[in-house]
Image (tube, rainbow, N blue to C red; front, side):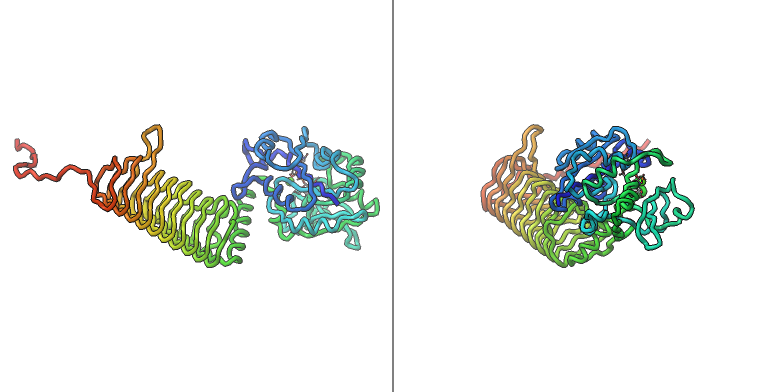
Length: 456
Ligand code: UD1
Ligand code: CA
C-alpha cells in the first residue's frame, strides 16, 4: 500500500526564543525537520507532505531541495486541523503516517514496526513510558488493557493524569478511515483546538483495535521545544554516533568527547580517536589511522596508517598512507598529500599536491603548488602565489631542497634535485641539480661602535 507521510511542522516554537523557525534549529549541523524527512525517506513507496506555518517561508526556502509537497497551515488550530490541510492528497487506499517535524531522533525501524500494524481493523499508535508525563496526552486503556482514547493533559481528570503511558503523536492508519474521522473533529475542548488525538476514540467506536508500539526510549520520541532539549538531544545523538563507531572497530578515548556532524563514506578498523575530535561532512578514513586531540576533519579522505597529531584541521583534502600531519597543521580545500609525507606544525597548505615522501615540517604556506616527491621544504618557506589580483603556480620538482625562510614568487619552477639557499627570494625558475641562492653577501664592520648614552 502506498504511504503518505504527513509531517507536522507548523508550530511556533516560542520557547526557543529565536528568530529562526524551530524546525530549522539543528542537531549535528542538520535541521530538525531534515532528520525527520530523511528518516521517512527510508520507507518504500512513500510520498511526503510537510505542513508549515509560522516562519514557514524560510523553512520552505531553506529545505526546498526536499522531495516533498509543502502545505501551509495559515492558523495553528491544532494537530487535527494540521492534518486536515493535507487530506485532499490522501487516496482511500493509502496508509497515512503522521510525524512531527520537531522530533528528530525517531528511528526508521520504529516506523516500519508501526506500519505493519495498520489495517482496516486496526490503527497503529506509538506510545512512550514516561517518568514524568506532564504535558503529554495520556493513553487511556480499559480493563482488558485495550486503548479506548487519548486524553490531553488539560482535559484529563485526576486518575487519567496519573497514567504514565504518553502519546508520542506519531500514528499510522488507513486513508479512507482517516478522512471520515477528520471530518468529524470538533474543537470542543479545554484548548479549543482540533485534536488529532480524538480520532482514537472514533476508531474504537468504529470497531477498530488500537495497536500500540512502545518507543525504544523517551529520547527517541522527544520533541524539541527549548534550547535545553535541543542540547540534550544533540548529546543523545552524538552518543549514538560514538556507539556505532565503536561497534565498527574504532577506539574512542572518550565517547562523550567526539562529535560527528555528517557521515563516514568509508571507515577502516583500529582507528584511534583522541578527545574533542569533530568530523563534519562526508569523511573517508582508512584503517590504523590515529587522530590526536582537537582535530577537525571535514570532507577528508585519509588513507591507512596516517597519523594526525593534535589541533590539526583538514578540509576537502586527502592524505596518503603513512603520512604524518600536524600538530597544528591546516590542510585547506584541494590539498592532496601523497603517502609517507610529513606536514608539520603551523604549516598551511591550499590547493596543492605534495608527492610521496616530501616534508614540510615547520611554519610554511604552500598555495597553488605542485610539490614533487622527496622534496624537503625548510622552516618558514612560503609561496607568494598571489599578486593581489591573480593566483600563480609554484612547481617544485622531485628531490629539491628548499632552504629555510625562502620566498618562492610564483609563477616559478624549482628544478629536480635543485637546492635553494636559506633566506632566498626566488623570482625566476631555478635549474635542476644546482644551488641557487639570492641573498646579499654577509659583511662585518670592524670599526663599528655601538651607540651609548651620553653621561651628563
Ligand atoms: C500533542 C498531542 C499529545 C502528545 C504530544 C506529544 C494532540 C492534540 N496532542 O500535544 O497527545 O502527547 O503532542 O508531544 O495532538 N502542529 C501543527 N499545527 C498545529 C498544531 C501543532 O503543525 O496547529 C505541530 C507542531 O509543530 C508539533 C506537533 O504538531 O510538531 C505537535 O504540536 P504540539 O503543540 O507540540 O503538541 P501538543 O498539543 O503539545
Ligand atoms: Ca508539545
